[in-house]
Structures are given as structure tokens and as C-alpha cells.
Image 1 (cartoon, rainbow, N blue to C red):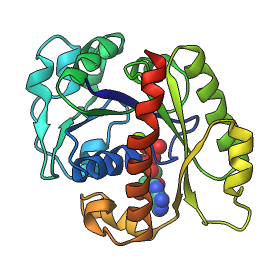
Image 2: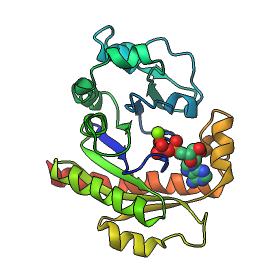
Image 3: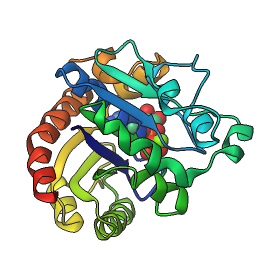
Image 4: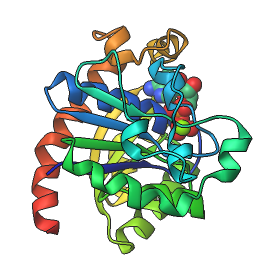
Length: 245
Ligand code: ADP
Ligand code: MG
């Protein structure tokens, strides 16, 4: 039985999509069968970051009742990694019923070792439907106080809603002299710090190439940090998920 992990944050732009793509590919490199899901229905860009632009059937078609989930699962060029893409046009968005997300995503754990769910930011209905499609959650924040406190709130709500909060990723560390240091961030967040991902221009360069950094520049600091995040998750989360059941 696989694991369903939602990637969540308080604010947009913290690096959820980047984390979803790199974590999925890192887990694939480790030999796990992975499905990355674009559940950010209105601001979908996981396909773009993963360099896949020719999908004809998307999660929106499934949510509109026009396709089965199996028809929306695509193999990617990354080892062991599959993708469920989303549509970007508004016609698809208005026909899709986001309340159906948990019902279509949860059964994927029968088929994959890891299902990684890219979610919208915050706690509005769209975000809740996406994150509640998982059983565990990884929070993503940047080293700024308002970003950390917003993400902390999201963690508290998701824990109350029954998700196992594995911890948080401190992303884009080192961009500014006023960055909140990792130990202080961990104290504020009150959940374990899973990884510090440095601010690394290779991450953005990789996006321009349509290939996440763990594949594009595996030796970069950003790529190494995402690989460590994947290893950490395979180690601690197995324990957590056992506790939950
Ligand atoms: P979200 O999905 O949370 O809205 P994204 O993953 O789309 O955020 O990231 C927002 C922007 O920040 C993107 O342009 C991405 O390339 C950039 N970015 C994310 N993480 C890093 C990093 N560690 N170093 C440099 N740029 C980053
Ligand atoms: Mg995103």
C-alpha cells in the first residue's frame, strides 16, 4: 500500500510545485513508483515544471465526469515517475468539481508507492479539497516571518482535519540577510524541519529547460537538498504512517 503526501503552504509562490516535481523525481530515482498529481486546479503548472505539454486528458476531465483517472495518468521521461496533469483553460476549470478530488486521488495508493499532491496555497475550499486527498502532509515555507506563521496555521488546521503533518521544508534559504534561520523557524513551526533548500539559480534555470533541478543539475546544492528531503521522508514517514493506522 502506497503513501499519499500533500504538499501545502500558507502563501503562494513558496515552492510547492517545485517541491512536488523534485521530490517525485528524487523518489523515482530511489526506485519507488511515484505519481505526481496536479491538484492546483486554477493555477496549474506542474506539467510545465516537469516539461510535459502534450497531455490530452487531464484531472479536470476526470472531475467533470468525462474521463476515468486511469486515462489521465501519463508516464514521464523521469524514471518510475507518472504524472496526472491539469488543464489550464478556464472552460475546463468551471466544469470540474473540486469536491471529487479526494475520491479520485486516494485509490491511487493501490498502484503507487508514493502519490505526491501539488495543492493550492491557503485554506480555502479548493486548497482543502486538494490537501485532504492526502493522508500525510509536507508544508513548504520561505524564511520570512509572515510566510512561516501562515504555513504554521495551515499545519494546525490540517492536523486537526486528520492529516499526519510530517514537517516542513524551509525553501529559498539564503536569499536575504534577514532570513529567519532554520532553528528559529523550527521553533515557530512546532513541527520537524525536514530540509533546508537553498536559494539556487539552478532551480529556476531548470524550470526554463522544462526539467526539474534534480534531473537538470543533480550536483547543484538545490538538487542535493531535494534528494536529502526524499531520503528523509522515506525514513521518518514510514514510522508516522504506521502510528496513524
Ligand atoms: P508555488 O507552487 O508554491 O506557488 P513554485 O514552486 O511555483 O511555488 O515556485 C515559485 C517560484 O520560485 C518559481 O519561479 C520557482 O522556480 C522559484 N523557486 C522555488 N524554489 C526555489 C529555490 N530553492 N531557489 C530558487 N528559486 C526557487
Ligand atoms: Mg504551485
